[in-house]
Image (cartoon, rainbow, N blue to C red):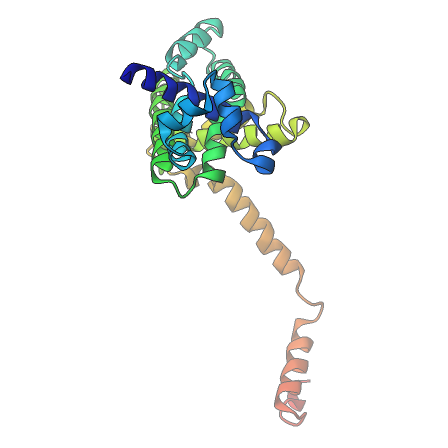
Length: 265
């Protein structure tokens, strides 16, 4: 009997996850329907209540399981990098773009992406659900850190402070998910190769090929110096045609008379 209950529980939770992730506007209009859930799971409403006792307990269990049920298999990143390195003949730019293109497509089509959105939108106050989402991000960070360590090692370089492989992983996970969210709403705004190009641009800035123990500010120093030079030049260009006269006029106005300044004018 325990086995049947466990199987029913799993079927009903899977049905609920599918309904939340695929239901769209219907979820806002009518919420989770016990009838629909039972039908989708191939079970009866009686079995639903026998398994969970109440809809409230079911929703609690569903929120806790939503991210885990939709977690994608991202363990193949190591093989993906090695295959990309071989096919690109060691060209790290082509390797990065190939890996990024694959990851962008996977994240874009992954149920886990929608599950994360659903948890943040519908279950942000649910401790277990948010814990599961945090754990999922930890898994992504761990895999990403390993992947970027491998790429950086192939590049024979180090990272400029304050970046570490973990911070790069966190940053790129945020970027890819942000681009995916935008593409779901406005596909034309996000070219397929945008993520790869962004990663190349970022890595070009944070990677220190000479192992100079540099800070990211050092990479921007030439640009900053030029901007400050132009700024100072523009300030000089803004001086009045007759600065001496303007200063005397301002002083005369401030002192409220002309006698004191007459000998200077």
